[in-house]
Amino acid sequence: MAKDYYGVLSVRRDASDAEIKKAYRKLAMQYHPDRNLGKEKWANEKFKEINEAYGVLGDPQKRRQYDQFGTVGNIGDIFGSPYTATTFEEMMKDFGGAGLRFDFLDNIFGDFLKGRGSSFSFRSFGGGPGGVIFEGRPGQEINLGEIFGQARRARRQDVRYELAISRKEALQGAKKILKRRGKRLEVKIPAGVKTGDVVKLRNALQTSDGLPGDILIKVIVK
Image (cartoon, rainbow, N blue to C red; front, side, top):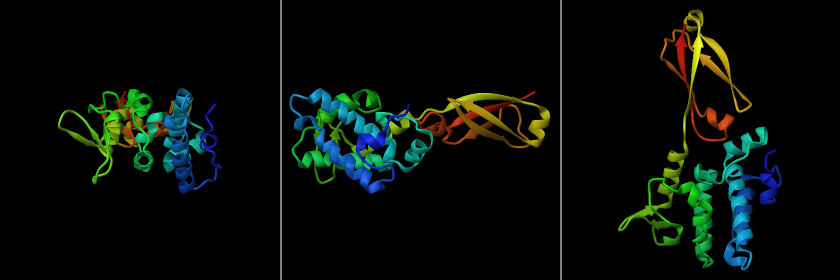
């Protein structure tokens, strides 16, 4: 059963994007471990929940998919969209303005961002005229937007299938149904395809798996 992300953020199902964003930032401040001394483990879990929820509801496309199919997201979804990534950066500025620490974010997001092409830590957070900046390898600075971009690129994975069709179907074109994770995806085979041609279902993994990525179908004419 899908998680109730609206309940996690304490908003109505018809809440506006602005209301969802406001609720997320409010809850992020509420569940910061510095404000829950003695209950840090509980606060970390709550923080994970609200970030997973906002990673889905904060992105219009993911929210429509969730409303229609009830798919469950991942805490890393918050890095996968410019909508949610921007709000996450604003949330971190909220923490900085309130004098709250950032190191607890290493435990929450460390596994997801590990090995994404940059060596960085939320512990090395520093503010400045340029906005939110992280120190990376010695002598290097990494903008938060670059980190999100690396996470999106690393997280995207295309899936490949092979599809055998008849010569008549190859000549005239055809429509096939691909079933993946309980979802039915229509595959339109254009007329004139040859063995080895690839039909791309752009962003189809968002529908079937709730993750970014294309489905690539290699055609084999028999």
